[in-house]
Amino acid sequence: MHRRITVVMAATAALGIGAVGLVPAAGAAPRKKNEIRIVGGTIYKPGVMIGDNIRFNRNTTVKSGATVKIVNKGSAESGPHTLSLVKKSALPLTFAQAAKCFRAAGVCGPLVAAHQFNPEDEEAPPAVLEYNAGAAGFGTMGDLETAGDSLFMAPGRGGSIKVTARKGSKLTFFCAIHPWMQGKITVR
Image (cartoon, rainbow, N blue to C red):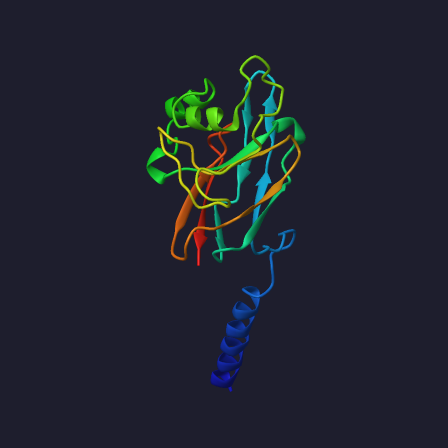
């Protein structure tokens, strides 16, 4: 009798564990295909710190030729964003590297030039909203010397990009305005 109860309990537990993987956690948003999300916002603690936890979801997988929608769920006061393709070796990994972006230098220098930002009016949108380094679409990576494909998005706005990189490509990207916002697109 005890053995039969043990077998039934083990089978029930196995089914329950399998079912947990099928049901999303409470409050979790279902993941959508071909979508990059911007989430987060400013953190302000008087007498302690001010910070920003705005970020992209880190990994997105798409088919070559697919359009990726960028959904901005972050706070509007976080300002504008870019989704800029750059080689992994050029991504800012330290505060010193990221700080160069605040001066339109480092990996961000070529992107500022490509988008034609006006240094006299930091509030004005750039003259070029979508920069294609090569053919139309997103597939050309930038580095410390050259701009890759890049999309500028106004505060509170999203956008979309057509991924033209060939199957098997891994496209690393970041926001030239918030350089800690980084992610990767895997092209199938």
